Image (cartoon, rainbow, N blue to C red; front, top):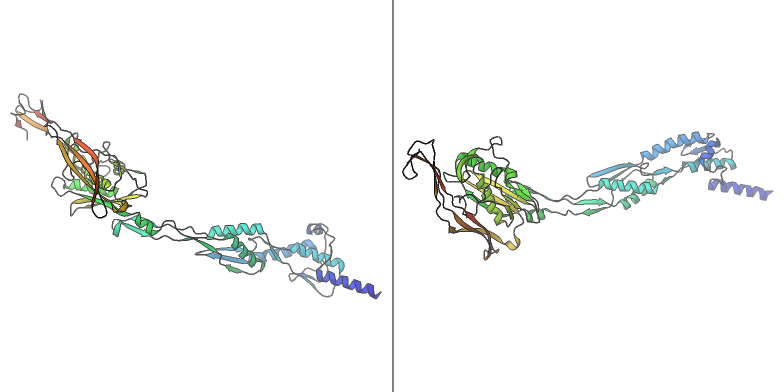
Length: 458
């Protein structure tokens, strides 16, 4: 008999130590359906659930446990960013159902007891949910590197203002998941600094400065009375302002007429002397050809590809023969293509005190310090043109009116001259061969007169 009692005591001890043997319920759902009731003197997580139906105890304990898991907070911070997340959001859960089954099982073997039997739930975690959340947190904290920038500003030294590049970083999501798991299973709030990988910027301020150097600049003057009239200077300054700061991407084409827009009163242009049909006329935007001609020379010196350029009817005084470029609304245009591997920027400044316009080209200087100078010369003078005399019935007899002066044409050749970094001449290339055609004169005379004998009309 003593031996039987000893075996029963040992068995009961094993039950108490291990928690329970096999429950009569396969899972918590079956226990709830069966209306299972917990035994006396049972506490789970310090809540007295003695004599409660399992369903009721589960509801009460679940509310407590859910609130507890939501209260476990983790701050993940990297750089200037931070993310707050709870244990519940990370996939944490309790083994409450298993604990309830153990408590039911124990009641089968030990239905009554004078001493409270205490049970404690523990936290487990859904590894897949944790991994996904760690990846989301990492994505929220990751900082992309910021490339350096160069912003054109004619007032700045060198023509540009620069911002430095900023390194970025990438959070190691896999190691972050491990850090979060440790904190969750320890059931304590935590501030976590994740492991990061630094990401350098691809484009630094050094790169930006190298790509925005002054390649060349060219100036023309409007000091003379002919070129320095107020309306003409106004139009020059307006055109310069419109093209100033224009950036042309690699392979992109600059279109002068497109940038300036139609030259008319509605767009704020003023009337000044221009050339139309080989005659000087007053037209809106008169003078803008000095801007296009100045730009043309700067573009040649920067070794860019000119794609559209037309010379004037005759050479002009502000630039050497063969080095002019005329434009007009709806007519001739000036275009060039950026053949560099980086963007280029055009600077255009009008100095009304010194009476000149200067155009600068910024980008990468030519390789090996090479520079280009432009030269041109007249290589042929064309025959003297005739003057056509036309009888004009509106003129009084003996009166003549010169409609157009005859102009003798010429041929000019323009060259690019290449020099090394020490100023030594390397070679030259012909750019254009321009033929300024002879222009016949036109004179109107009154009836009965001739161009040689008639009186000139005032």
